[in-house]
Length: 195
Image 1: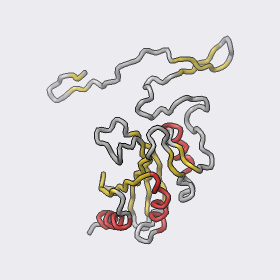
Image 2: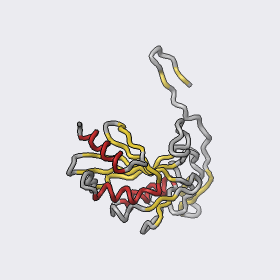
Image 3: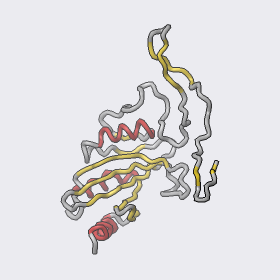
Image 4: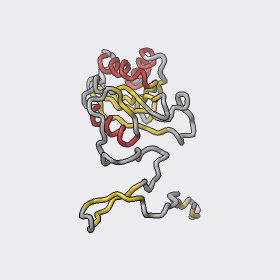
């Protein structure tokens, strides 16, 4: 049995309620968001796992995904873990239950470096991390309205900023560029253009 198949077998026996599959030569463990802390603790301390390092956290907006996953939950928070002892990586996908106000417990109690990753997911996707020590924007301005990586956020944005020489400061104003069709033009094998 390969190391990856052994990991998948261990995941299935330890987390029988989860969905475990193989994607891109890595194991993916999909769970509901309310199970994230106990799951991360088992993955970090379990003798068969030892995922001691959190590599990254990202959020995903599945609102336009053709296959509905986990009761049509729109958002998932994805944790990338590394076990140096076992030379393995694991992707943990936690589906957040409320599509209008996504909330999940902070992972900073298990992995201290989750702090800035969670701030990024909050800023760009609007996922709230319960009990986070300092949840505030990290990439956009403090006065920014909306979350730019959500599928329903307009691609041209809502406001633009520019320097006003009369006021001698940067000001915000409504976007002045025209909406564009962002369908890429693709040339297929026969040389025809799409779009």
